[in-house]
Length: 280
Image (spheres, rainbow, N blue to C red):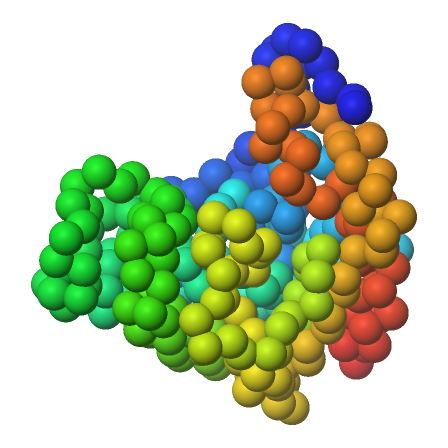
């Protein structure tokens, strides 16, 4: 394990802002008035605990600015609702979009925080009808709430899961259509996307991207959207936190994430695709 025992020794992400966005992104800040590739995604794109996440690794080979718009624990909503990010993605030579889970977006059953999409705000009357015995006031995070619903009734939970998948597909289609330019949709995980399941496992025990199936990904592919599936090798998974930078208090969170070796594998996989996509 590689970590500094003091919080002061944790990784400096050089946080920065772009335009009028209220969001903080990982720096160093990149120019947007020259050709660039935009990277939108969650914790992996941001590169939490990683000195050089895959956007930085791609940049060193591609020869274009790679702007990291990753947000830890992001859902799709945070990007769609941010005009600065959307304008940048539309202006980019290519927008690289990490596949993120379906739990962190507002839907017919519950509402999430507009910027911190992993935060649960409120349940809809419809969800309260489906789960009348649940006190939703005790939940602060979507995944905790969903895990509890699964525990109460896996049968009723299948209704919730289907709604999240439907909302994810519609929101992703909206996002890629609004971007308009070339999009590279990247699956980056320790497992391949599965075929749809009637109920599915407990969300607390499931890996990310949560609830996203192969069929959902395939439905997004068209002449402007290229789908790349990158599954970390056993060697990258076994490397664990080797090469990661985190404080002692962050050790548990770091163990749940893919490390530098997996990021290197991803960069080597999508690098040639991006070379081809950015070519005139």
